[in-house]
Length: 53
Image 1 (cartoon, rainbow, N blue to C red):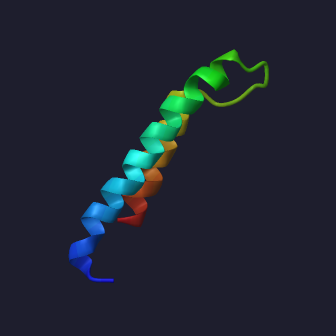
Image 2: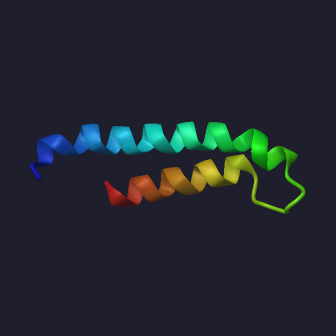
């Protein structure tokens, strides 16, 4: 894979992560299971994507 293709790939991964968080947020908020907040999940994902870049 060329390095020029990495920024669009990273952007796509981040977009998928954000859309996943937005879809999961209402489900998690209605869930009675104790889970980390959506802010914590999004921060964790952003840190992971930052480490991988």
